Every structure is written in C-alpha cells, then in structure tokens.
Image (cartoon, rainbow, N blue to C red):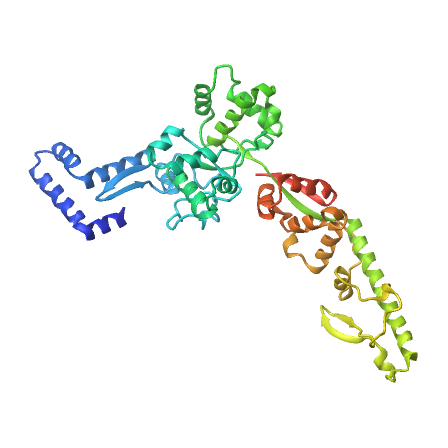
Length: 444
C-alpha cells in the first residue's frame, strides 16, 4: 500500500490531490455523517482506507484501487491472530519459529506470516469452489487450468509435468498466490486409494460443536456423525481406507477426508526410516578386514620370495613393498613388478574397491547393533557397514546406495521418492527387500 501511494504521488500527485479533496469535503460538511458519505462517494483513497479497516476487523482480504493500481491486501496472518486473540499462534500448530520464513516465498513474507513451507511433493486443497476462484481473475485461463490439474492426489512436481510448466517459477508461484488469497492451503498428497494414516490434532482450531454443525450441513443426512468418524480414527490408527464400510462408499469417504483436512481436523502421519547396522553386518565387515590383512601379509611374503632369486641385481631391502602415502594412520602398499613379470596367482593382485578402505585403518571388534544416524555423512566405518548391507541384495545394490543417504529418521517417504527420482513401486521394493536393516518410523 505504501509503495503504491508513493508511486502514484510521484506519477500524478495522487496523494496530495486526494488529501486536499478530503480536507475540502470536511470543511464543507455539516456533520461527520455527511462528510463520510461524500468522502466514500468521491474519494478513492477514502474507500481504500475503509476497505482496509474492515478487512483487518474481519480477518479477510481487501481488494482496493489506488490510482492505477488494483491491490489485494491483508494483515499478516500471525499478527492478525495476535490482534484478535481467538487462537494462540504460539501454541501447537503447523508453524514454528524456526520455520517462520520459507525462502521459496516472495520478499516480504517474513515475520508475521508464519507461512507453511512449500515442497515439490506437497499439493493444495482449494478452500472454495471453482466459481469463487474464477471471480478473482475471470480472464486467467492458467488459473483454471492449474485448478483442474492440481487435485489432492497430484503433487506440485507432477502438476509441473502434466502442465509442462516450470516447477519453481510457475507452479510454485501460482500456489503461493492461491494461498495468499486464502483460496487454498498446503497439504500432503492424498493417496488415491486412501492408504494414508491420519490422527487427530492435539487441539482443534474450531470447536467440535461448530465443526459438527458444518459437517451435517455439508454432507447427506445418511452420513455417519462427525463424532463417530473421529472416534474411529483416534481409537485405531489405520489407513483411512480401513474406515470405509464398503467399496461403494469410496466417493463419500474421499470427500469426507478432504473436508476434514481442509478444516484442520486431521494430521497425516509420515513414514521415515533409520538404517541399522546389525550384529551380522558388523561381524561380516570385521571378518572381511581380517581376511584382507591376511592376504596382504601373505602376498608381501610371496612377492618377496619370488623376486629374491630373480637375478635382477637389486638389494634385499629393495625387495620390500614400497611405502606409499599415509592415510588415516595406515600405509598404502604399492608394488610395481619388473617388465614382463606377472603375479603368480590372482589372489595376490592389489585389492580394489571397498578392500582398499579396509587396508588403511583398523576395523574395531565391536559387534553391538547400532543406528547409522547420518548415512549421507557416514564415517569410513559406517560406510563399510552401508556397503555390506547393500551387498545383501545384489540386484538392488545400486538403487539402495542411491537412496540410503535419506534413511536419517527425518526425511519422509514422499521426499525420498522425489529426490531419488525412483518410481513408487521401485522404492517400495527397496524398503521391502532391505527391511531387516531398516527401522520404520511413523509420526507427523
């Protein structure tokens, strides 16, 4: 608003002209009522100030005109809650102090907004119908197309592919605009078969009595009572599909789920994973390291014996393995045979791959089961455990190593699938095959 007034004043003296008009109307009016009526009739600035005041009072969006500008303005949501005092914004909720600013949002959406972060694996739930959206920008075919494609079971990333739009500059931008207009809210993607698990929030933003009345007016009379549905969900955390009386009720219960999510009456639980280095894995790594050291030791002796009588005229000390660069307190063994000389046996060739890492540090004899808390930042010892786990399923080894960095107990199933670019079925196969070394966690 300030920027628009400043621009209009610079462009054609708008603020000064409107101010003089209001002063003249005030001096000529017999009463404040007469002045107010005349000001709202003749002054666009007066109408803008009235609309802003009423929007702050009613916690809604104000559509105002300032000179050549049409603006949609509202109080920052967090400040609005503080002003009205109906809901404690510092209490349990979807925003936190640490996440009060998402860098994906435009400049200005900082303190006071507490906007929920947008991720490519999220979607939108539109809070009003098609007609209400079309009234905002009836000429915008892009907005209607966006609404048509972005259904509750389609993520932002999938919508970008279907629309052939850029994810960041077009899809996310449109999503932010719809959220700003309070026409939509961020949501987790709803599985088309209702396989997600939901729980009740610790505190309802709307009283149960009020929510129940809205529910009864929205759904047919034969629909079970809201209290009955919520009681079933809270008593037994199951996939929402579990609560369908029969397959014929799918459409009704799909609508019920979307309605509950729109009204903040349910929270989706997310699956996360932690990677476990079991006793067997640690024993295998330790045994392999001991065998490697034995092979290296035997190989040193064997190579020395074969080179000593060769008649090449080298001193005995030259027949010993050369000392390479030290790494992590270990020695890299390097041996270059004379031209034409071949090792007597393949088992004495220089080890490669994981074996090289075993050679230059000591593997502890500790077989107690433990978590690998940060697979993406694994220590050398942890990386050996990860490699050993991966080898348990040779046909999936490469895919497992591609996704295991996300098994940190924080990254959700949907985020892992998006970042790894694996199909859902492929990722589920990894989770199933590597189940003995994974701990599944289910929480919001």
